[in-house]
Image (cartoon, rainbow, N blue to C red; front, side, top):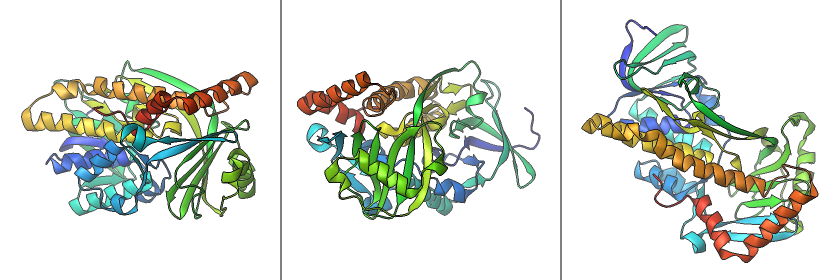
Length: 395
């Protein structure tokens, strides 16, 4: 890929979601020049409704790098979650079991916070870029990014490129010889966002013979609810009234009685998928976030994994540019994949014991037995809590 007159930059970042913006912020604070290339317009990126549960390690990351002011004002600290199996309920006490809490703060808010931070810094972010192409380079050749912005051909010659552009972006396709591991589930999450007080102070994960449901929130006045549906379900077949009726059926009766309904602000269906790419790097190209791995949302790991990826990658870039130490870059993929596969295992397990992946009585009895085991075993609750809040000492 040749590009006469290309602009020289230390790190080119593909994708201006939270992973790409966070990586750019960490590099800028270390004095490392970067450019961020994003195919969508800024308004679209900042409006995307995604995850909302942050591990304590990610909260610490945001605070350490001067991104925690609004999070500390508006984030909701949760000391546990509620599990339900039919009419039975069990609270998993994170604080008692691990000494940690999680924080509810939407991915949308993190993206906006990062965008404002970059505005103040003057970072070059190219929103609405088209025809993005990547050359990963090699030991003796720079990496390249080319794109079209407002009809103009642009090119960047980079020491390194970070692919933070999600599952459908071009970065993963630029890794030759990659192995892809995937499990596609026959189910999806139908989500509804509304301005109504949450039905409970903490998240409720409900396993029901009709399917899974989740009662979540974004603030004391804004709720986010989900019901499990078929992967091929038609969104148009789910008017608000049907959604609320189905959600109430799947929640325990005493919880459903407290449910406050409101018109949907946003409604969408997200497929359930487990996906991992190995390796997460090739030559001068490094993958992070959904470009490298996807987890079912059940375990609340997607955003947390993405931000931990770029934390690891930023440290490796800083070691390279500040000390000419390339060892952390060489070890980036293996360091991340250890954490990724642990999260994949937990998300797969949590999904399998809460969802109606197979419509059979045997599977339902196994779920009921799993719930009974959790209710009786503090050790089992501790394993769940440790995985949910993030295992201490992960890189």
